Image 1: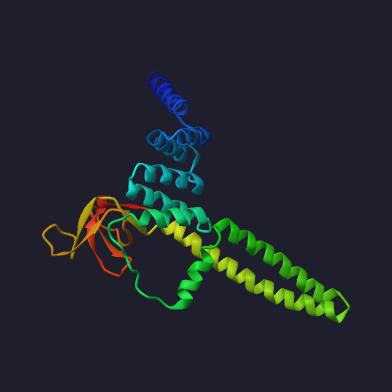
Image 2 (image 1 turned 135 degrees about the horizontal axis):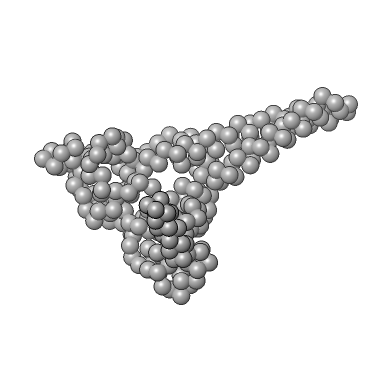
Length: 250
């Protein structure tokens, strides 16, 4: 009897959840009517029921931006960017939202090839790089076959040089795909959600105050092994300890 009641409760709960679940089209309709609070709740529902998607995170970020909830806007734009870094609209709106945060960060200088590689890997999403890797591998094999089995010299040269170019493209595509996959898997960055937080020198309220950081700032998580504190590094290079509940992982 207890099992039957439990099963009945589970079925009822699932039916209730499905009944109040939203589709993306419904969320888009609410956004179009400028009902941003309702649209945000609808997009959150879509993410829970249908899984993560760059477009949904982007639209959710737009809702929060319209409501002037800048930390939540930055958080969702960052999540959209993580899934689809090549989307120009996501890039533009993320820059716009970050421009409205209190702390204006000047990142430390870096070697030109580091910047070049980051810009290159961010020009497409993971699926795009994976597709390019497969296509370049097939074309490389065709070039090898052309070199091995075609008689004219010009065709053999075309095959060998083409295969070499495709090999380089394949390597770059695979490295870029691996880089993005690691970023999606690790999720070692977060957005400060508290209006203002004092960064500490160690994981304790009584430790030395280092500096003040405000909502919307992006941090890299260095140590998340503790229950209530985590060590973070800010984009300008400073680092320290903050309460875990002061930030949300991207």
